Figure 1 (tube, rainbow, N blue to C red):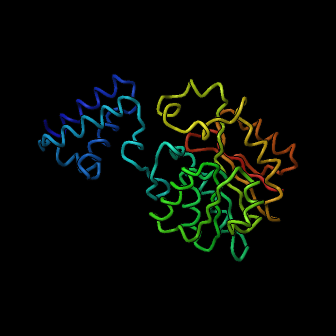
Figure 2 (figure 1 turned 60 degrees about the horizontal axis):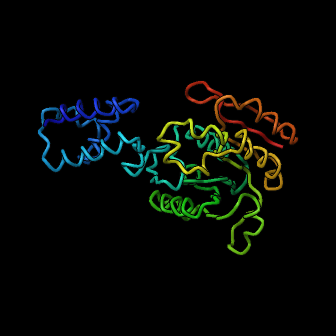
Length: 290
């Protein structure tokens, strides 16, 4: 079987299984199997795959046909130019979150603080904290998560991306973990930037999501409570104590939640400075200050 035939057959199989962008997914799986860039496939359409390569591809395609996320199959994803390892212990980073990370970087670079500080609330894979540390080398970053497995993954990713020494990792349930952080030498207690992509799916809606999400992302990273807004209420109420004068909070949210989240923060005496759209022109990120 040639490279082109393998792509065509794999794409047909994936399409029948309901996988979106089946041709692209097939190409990415074959490129992963062969250990080469996807675009190189186009230069070798007539190359005949070995039996081992064919068997390996067949297994990968089968897994993707069972709706296992591509990122779980390949073991990583790209985020702001960084290779981020993924697993079932943390939410797979989405493209929209890259914009959140970039806005955070812009703010940290513009702040007048000698050593800008940022808290990544619910760090997951560590993708936001890693981006902040890499693009703002003078900043001090704290990555906080309730899950020890997610925090371990974030540490591994930080080491792989050579920024682990600029990130403090804190295990615990939200801001209360910072209050008791003296025992693990986490500082500071206040930040110029609090940034978060918290769970925002309403509990009852999780079972309606695509299999790649509901069956493979950890429920704790998805479940925002009965209306999906639980973590925003918590952030609006608890974050002020941990925000430096002149600081900002930046949070990502889901489709249709902009007005409700804006109201939550305004009722909490925040000044909502802007609602930013994502790459598809959907309201996606709230920026607020005190």
